[in-house]
Length: 531
Image (cartoon, rainbow, N blue to C red; front, side, top):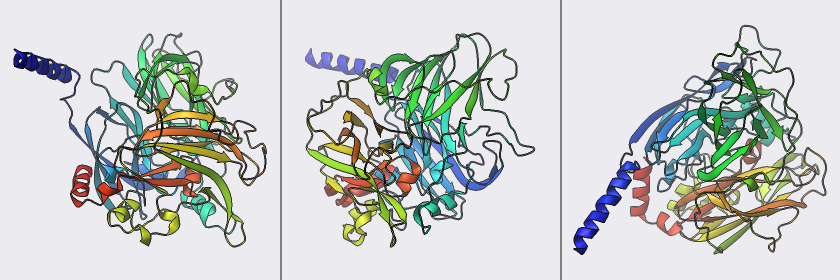
């Protein structure tokens, strides 16, 4: 009788799993070709763009939870390249992460590689370049759907855009005799399109337009592809009902705007319940001065007339808050461990560099991270050759697999007296946001009431944003504490997702499960899964 009952229960579990799509996973094969060329993303011709499959802004890749993505990257550039799938944990596929010099050897010019990734979580993700400043041009959406998901998707890739050549910007950051800031972007783009004004002759000057049906609900995928600015995104006269944030489902919450820092993603339900018309969606740069005010695109209802090129007036800025996330309630409790086995304290600050001190770098605990171009830290760990790497290319921490790790990220006033916002992204793991506060880290500060799991978190300035001097260079000016379970064997960077800051060394590297990486059989299995 017991065996019959167990068989019946097993059958019910199998049927439920099948209905839920657990047995419907498949292999998805995609190819992305990286090249250089011309275009006019903001209506001004640029002859030094990086393109994906011939376009500025790559194609949207769509798959289902549990599917295995086999992604072939073809590098047609005359320079090295690497690609990262942002938000994918790469659990069991550490060779597919694509962080150049850290867990991936950069691709040589005119070469190709195929890497495989199982997308274990449903949600809104994206892919982008992970070498120098190439992620300013090379990015595209990756949507992982639940089986049986309702509502059609609308994808919004938000980005900031410079007319300058990327190599010139990189040179100014690292190699010029005196530091040259990348400057402020000329435009905010939506899905690779915008209008900066003073357009080149003969180019398409229209704004990116989402065409929708009245009285319909859509699933809006909002992706923070910006390289410098955190932004507010909103649609006049429409609510955005947030339902998922970086793989974490939340109780539906209607908001007037969403704050999206570089690397962050939100899924919102949008119901077209307003009069048939054109509505100008707006991107506003926040947390620092110098933002362009041209981040416009159009939500066009079916039956509306052709949209004008700009609204009669722009929406006023919304005052930002460090507490934007407090309004969201995770619907799944992911059992955050009560305590940590390891606590890592990291202070990120700007330092003078070079013989005359005229250059600048960003450093973690006074170490400016330098990426290797001929090997990777992952390969050095496997070969037990970390000692051959320069000190500033080595991992900061080796973590035993399964340990619970707390990381305290402390902000510091830059050399110009300003406290900046830094969005921090961890590869290989999602983390809980345990707490945050102003000034120096306070171990006695209360923990977050609703610890939220995600993979990008901002460390905010709290006081005197917008390039207002706040204090002495190097003084603490805000902190965030995160917690993660180190259950994913590999070599994983934690870095600021402001492209110029990462390029200037604002990163640290964790090794998880070093003993496993010294086991040839385990390494062979990980390589095979990643291939």
